[in-house]
Image: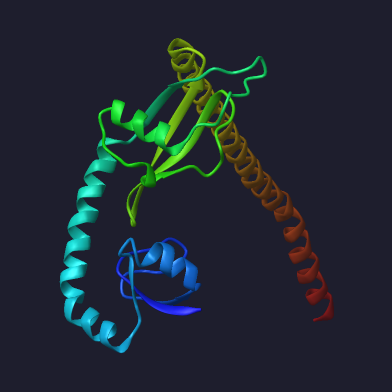
Length: 218
């Protein structure tokens, strides 16, 4: 393992300025050539401390730009037309390059290294991907894959209707549960009041019996 100083946030590794231990190959093939880290030598540690304020300021500017772009890209849907078999299996999976091209067609600019595909897209239908606009800013996008553009758009419309229907059903269920809880609480309160009223005569009889006993004793 080798120690490096992170120059930006790296997912599942650390934040700017963190000194972390990584495998030599990961440092040599990814972190160092992409300028995401420096070897944690004495000289580099001193150099980082001198440049830290500037590095943090530049990162803040890039993050703010990314956040602005993410706001514009909210609810982004990408449509891909692909040939597929009867079962919906694609003739080849969707690649990061395919998706970066689709993002460009939608009016935004990202490169394929910013596309994060958590699950390979190998069938028609809807899928979710992440766009890493900045190490600290990620936006989700929906990918609709079908054999025609009309089918891809229809998938999105159907999913929106289903989501709306499910949301309405959830709201109705929550309202019914709240009403049932309110009735149950009201019933419990009424029962307690009735029990209190029923106990009053019994308490009165006990008080009279006690007074009578005291009179007899005197």
